[in-house]
Amino acid sequence: MNIVVIGGGVAGSTVSRLLAKNHNVTLIQDRKWDKPCGGGTKIRAFEEFDLDTSIIREKFTSLKMFYKNDEIDLDLLGENLCIVFREEFDEYLRNEAKNSGVNLIYDKFIKIEKNIAILKNNKIKFDILIAADGVNSTVRKHLGLKDIPKVLTYYARIDKKIEKPLFYFDRKFGDDFYAWEFPHNNQTHIGSEASSFDNFKKYLNIDIKNKGYFIPSWQKNIQIQKDNIYFVGDSAGQVMPLSFEGIYFAMMSAKILAYSIENNLDYKKEWNKRLLLQFKFMKMLENGMKNNILREIIMFSFKFKFIQKISVKMWLTKIKM
Image (tube, rainbow, N blue to C red):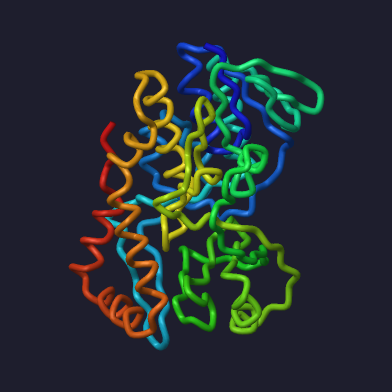
């Protein structure tokens, strides 16, 4: 079977590599670029997807949360969180896919004509097309599907060294969500919802030019398949609500999609079976954080170690395939 994958980020590279064992897979990547992303993910992903741990740039056993006058150290129950550099990590994943037999082409997707992917410099016939082309998916637009709900965030990199990820839950810094600082060797990646980024910069006492990008806002009713065309990763909105954790869930969603295709199963049903409950719970918390009273209660609860432990264990729960 001929499978064309549009988008060589985390989701696209992963599903390509998994499907290449039994199919003729072509992976289309527009260009090499550094996705604006904090790069945080579960270390467990490296074992689950058989990845080289040398690509990890930072490892953490805890993180810190700030809310009003409180500082909360969250114990991650071991070295369970890591940072990768997205340009480096994504290229590594594309090369892993290529080494698994995937035909990797750098080209630009234009449109689809009768099971033919029309690229700027190529035309490729497919039996299945997988769109992993991000939150602003060109494939979705071409098919006339609804855009992915999304949140505009601003980010920047600053010359500052911090020891662990920092999360700020005051509304003036993160509005409905949170602001963050992620270590990147001797630099720090900062960001927040666009409406509150200036306040966050003032708090950090920095004056730096920022860039903007959209993060998918997951909804249960997002369409992730149309006939023989599938969507995965950001193009399917598969980013965990509230935490905005995207890397691990893009890879896991890619694994579920590959499993569904290999076994001729309903992709939506298989994804729901493994991830819907967790996504719905986090969406409920995300909506709760938009209410000032509920935000106060949620943040107060994290002062208790048993709440922290339960939360981290939920985060570390292995998804069964």
